[in-house]
Length: 241
Ligand SMILES: C[S@@+](CC[C@H](N)C(=O)[O-])C[C@H]1O[C@@H](n2cnc3c(N)ncnc32)[C@H](O)[C@@H]1O
Image 1: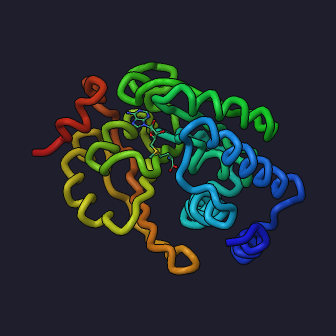
Image 2: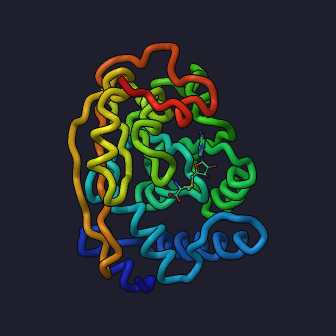
């Protein structure tokens, strides 16, 4: 997807990028590939692939949850890596207040420099494991929306992400083809952590690049204080009945 095709694809969804937003994506691309020469951020570096598999793919979330396009929401992106999906979402909707959590400090440092170059405000960067940050009162059950793309299987992700979601908020897991199996294995953890499945939506990426599945988990009640468990435990011993 060339940059021009990216702009057109968004225009078809009634998102007309301003010159400033186009320039922000150009700067993002440049910073991503330049920094990637000295630090492992992504395996995707070819321009058309970055625009499709990182930028467009992140924004598919906008199409499936239109509140992200215009509302003043608080959003927490768990395991954001080089900023996906939250930085593209923030470029499109500057009103979002985003918090990014990642356990690799070099990625947080990259994002710190990127956020300054893109002149984004209301972006909080937190270096730490979700299992620990999720216990901190500053962040626990504070967010309208929590996102995670390519971080862990859903039964693990629930324990990393639902503690950040406020009661009445939504955790959106961005998944590929395997979502239905993962949902089946994650039902128990969703219930234990205070959530319920609200919706599931699929979206076909252009150019036959595959299916994206979004699982919307509504936060019905508080997550019990003992979750998340210690770092590493959610992935070693996922919550099962
Ligand atoms: C495969 S990358 C995906 C990055 C990004 N979401 C994307 O879609 O390109 C997974 C990221 O999650 C982070 N991560 C994994 N487990 C984590 C945890 N328990 N707490 C915080 N970050 C975590 C890793 O450091 C890494 O940056």
